[in-house]
Length: 447
Image (cartoon, rainbow, N blue to C red; front, side, top):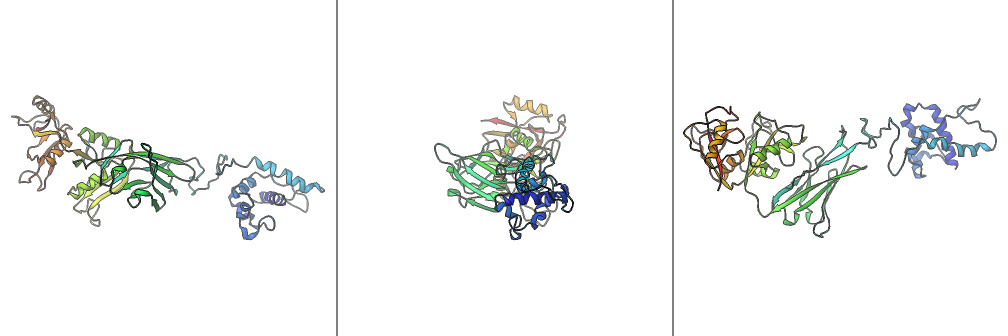
């Protein structure tokens, strides 16, 4: 009781001396208390050791009334007789109680102006910031022996100007009666993997707030649903990623794709639609990396399946990242799904049908080209189908032709004079006037 009385008296004295605008300096101002109040060697934690958290002293100090003064004893209470100590004990805690915040293990301020316990930007850990975890809705597909990246990133609403320390946990959900499996736990740069995942997993941190899981050497039992959980100390949020494994790597070809209006016109969702419209899907990082190993060189950045933006360079040059970097897949990291705009890297599977150049006596407009393919029992070919025919069927033609998206292209397997650059590939004339009669058409027919 003597401690409570002493703290209350000292609190009230200091309340008269210190402006409320400097209330945050209370622990320093209280450091002169001694004896049963607070030993100098204890610092401000002396109160916490006696069961009085320092935040409670802060709140108590702010709410305590000023002591009345009387001549000769400024700042001290004029309480007559032997009732003085008892009244101080009973009365002083009461007006302070209303100033104490609700406490349930964390501190939540009900002060409309708040006490900023954060980084000076109004981003304290008690300011009601919402944590959001983003994972893809679609199932990811891979094959045994490959490497896979399970995308996961997080952000705050409203956005923060500086990072917070977080704890990240990945685990595989229970299926068919099997128990849940811990996969990885990470705090800062330190991480620990578990069980069959030990040594095969790590966090991919090539962008801000990127906590995607990379798995090397996929096994058939790795197929399933994984949960990505982010904990920032006050709250936790999680997202689900589904991984499906197939027996062998799907055969396909990666190709860059631009919007008809030109370079860097697609946000992530538009890139997904654009690839699907060309009989393809957005490529994964592993597919782009494999294409780079096979020689794909492209200087424009494009979306990948995990919503990161990257581009492959085999020939180092100044406009493509500068001369100081080695060849490789360059990364811009994850980008905003709606606000940022780039090209796309699409992945087209091996053909089930046939792509061919339609022999026609005249050059055609785009509408005439579509009709000519229909009359031949086919459809005008899509970009992904033309790339797949070039890659897997050896389609080699030096005649430029219309495709379904309104572009004009032609495939070259064996480079030769007057047939474009001296490298194999699919040449593009861009998106000419659809009313022009300068080109033929490539058609696609199911066998």
